[in-house]
Length: 284
Image: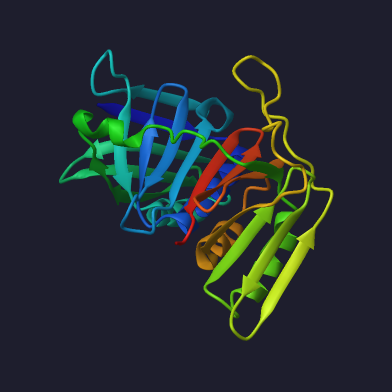
């Protein structure tokens, strides 16, 4: 297995750094899947962490000036690594004014991602700062555990309000309760609700719009039998939602959520070259 990549463009480097920062806020450890054209950051903690899962996908061509990899085998040209995203995020923080950053999979004493940051210097020779980030290589037989999560059959899909607004609402609410109810309908309305013995607070959002999902036969499939006004709802852990909103450093061009009543809330944040899916299970 071999992997090496290089980023020279500063804007790409800063953008990549923001993506990694966001992931570091959502996952203590995650799986990095490398293919010839894409990088994926995957979290599938089914039980251990309340079942939150994440799927983040980047097109390598939009970030890297050079990108070479050889996978586990010719017919399985992929590499799966386990890593602590915070370590990668820290390494990239030293690269804010770098001339170039090289990332390479090495195996001296243990498998590592070596991040070499070339910094501008006054003399002709440049300074290079190197970070070795330990990784675990995931064997081929376990790869199936890291397949893309399927989009559940949802009751309602709705565009999210401005994430900054939503974030400040959720931050105020989290002092009052550990859980929050998200409800929405096919009429572009969404409510965030807190209900405890002492207090009940609801924030209403209107005119958000509902995404036109195409079904198998190409017709939009926003469950036609569903009444437009009726709400689908799920109660979720408020800290998990806050974590998602607080970690957002990639300003998405589109943000939406799908609600499977009383089962799961599926968030999708889309940027030109990054897509992030985040699944939060409903509380019983």
